[in-house]
Amino acid sequence: MRFRFSNTVWFVLLICVALTGPWQTQLLAQEARGSILGTVVDPTGSAVPGAAVTITNQAMGTKVSRTTNEAGIYQASFLIPGLYQIEVEHSGFKKVVRDGVEIRVNDRVELNFTLEVGAAVESITVTGETPLL
Image 1 (cartoon, one colour):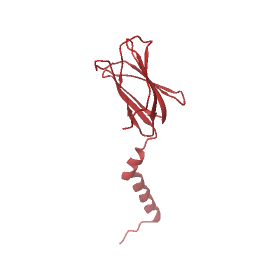
Image 2 (cartoon, rainbow, N blue to C red):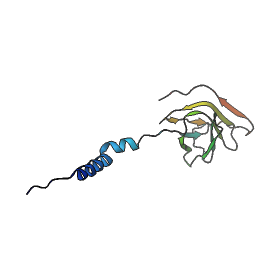
Image 3 (cartoon, helix red, strand yellow):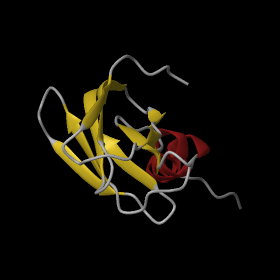
């Protein structure tokens, strides 16, 4: 006796294969946003924990705030593509501002900062484009 599959059974099997195939993982991995990460150190190269990092989308004005961890590392994920301004400040150091950082779809931009000793009212502005890796 032979068993025959009906059209409905074939359809259900086809859907199951389509939903669990290896290509689904690749499709789910696509991300339409980018991220910025890096370290903040002092002039001697030591980590600066607790530094305030403010990332501002220059077109929309939205801000993301992060604080560096004990190793001086910060990370901001899921940023909408566009141009950003990054400000880094910590008491006892000059504020550093970097303008025009471009984030594109699925970018992972690494920006490291070295804070100079000085009054908090002083700031250093870095201009220019960052090379894409």
